[in-house]
Length: 266
Image (cartoon, rainbow, N blue to C red; front, top):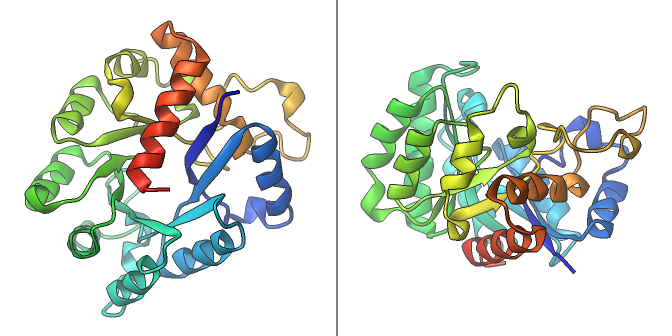
């Protein structure tokens, strides 16, 4: 039987506020055996850690400040994140990085916040959960300043070019793929990326409730939640990767699960 690990779900999102327990059970029923809750601000990271603690061995959490929330970064932020990262079930620093697509936080504030979290990851030696959107050149420049000391890192929800993927892989980073790879109109270029990435550097995620895979059957979507992604749909991400690579689903399940378990020390 195939087993899956979802390296990124946003369980604190308000779309899950009434049925989070059911969502977790649905995922387990779909053989998604472990899930990592993404921390996107200090407050959100604290809430994610609290929820994850209730599902020992099944749920884990990251602690970080998303570039959209960089405007909330202050003198207490790093100490607060560091306190969370002392918990065994808080397994990664992030989500952190740069996002110049939306610019919800000023770019200089984003960089300040990102650099502080890179330093935090070096201090606590827990892996990085990275976000980069429309900021590749600057992201690489900032990251390179810390590269020799950095712990392991995964660029989550990767939708970039093949050349960008090669750059990340050359730095030793892992790549996380979502349901975006099944969107043949918007993300057709990801086919060659997925075919290029070595199986030992690949992880899968839903980024639920976002990034709903295009290949989820309509019969699995309820009318009320017809556009909401769930961790139970992770096998459809794995299925797309398997199809693009011309291998069995079991191959992708095995490699992505082994990679995630070793990377996050689950």
